[in-house]
Length: 131
Image (cartoon, rainbow, N blue to C red; front, side, top):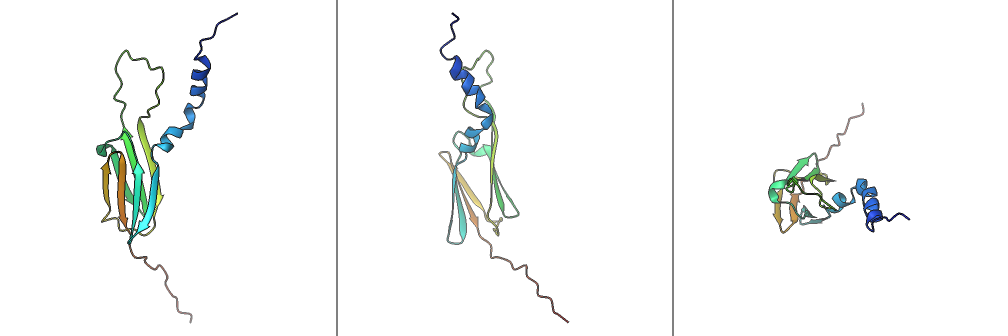
């Protein structure tokens, strides 16, 4: 009879689910609401610093990117389990007509708050005279 270490199956199944990136998707949960002529985004980004976060406004889209380097690259460490993710995580939202010159953002206690003012909707209609 061959003995198998007790944690063999647990480690095997943990490796099986590694490719699904569930952790990264859950790392940026957010609420978006509209109030008084602006959109409000409240996003949880735990474990990051404000210097790690970049916000871009591109044609009505708001793109939030957070990048974190692995600080635990100490020689001689052999991890049994490593669940914290490193690298880049990103989310984007289409909000439509926004005033991208007056966007404000604050980051405190792992929560990013972004205020995106709305811009009056421009009419792209052009009436053509029928002759």
